[in-house]
Length: 302
Image (cartoon, rainbow, N blue to C red; front, top):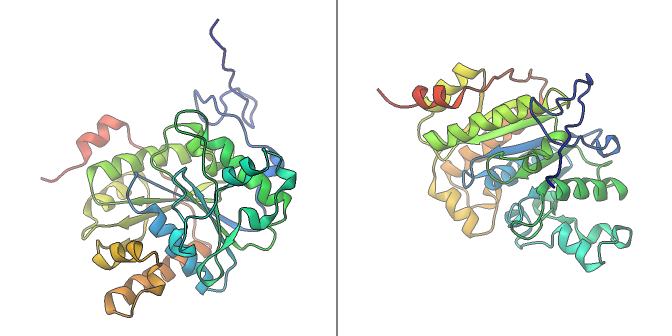
């Protein structure tokens, strides 16, 4: 017998759930994160989300904010430039106590990184066996139970890859702003369009709104800027493809710890400007995604 999936009702009671045709389950009300600016970072796989997230976390901390970064990838490599190690994940910690969360202490899954940034890696189920959305929910639940979000000003969710299911979109249920990382190329912008669609769907029932896009690993931004103008996005920052950024990952360091050089200082300043912009009262982007085939024809050079 085939299992039947019944969509949950949205706030208007019309049964659509989180977007038309959605089969996603709503977030439990007591898991809402209050009092902190919550940012969910998305983008195509390998585009530099963890590099951006970690350096943005440091930038916020340099502005005097108390920051918590949550890596949402089973590879648990979001925070290693902050902590200089692959920290144990929430799933690791839960397995160690046979999934009795009441036995966990904060120091079992929260670790302090560079400049006081607090770091958590949610981890994930073994490949092909579970849902990342469940892990995100358990992570937030543990943080709330231990009152670890009460003294936090900024929370950054670093989310793996493109948005292909409700599990990957789960951090959007907690976030105030969605930040998209994109290179100036076809694949990155195609993924960005899907992320815009996901955030648009989530915004119908949750507080999340689009902050804008960060152009990364690109000397030019013409394709990104053209897409932004077409759908209603804004570019908040631009980071070129510098070898110093690649070296910082190999050195397991944030860019704020790299040796002084004009190009490094310029990148640090750009991260500080980005952090300040996200803290400001700028209005969200009211962006609408393009149909895939329309986007296919839209992108490209003359």
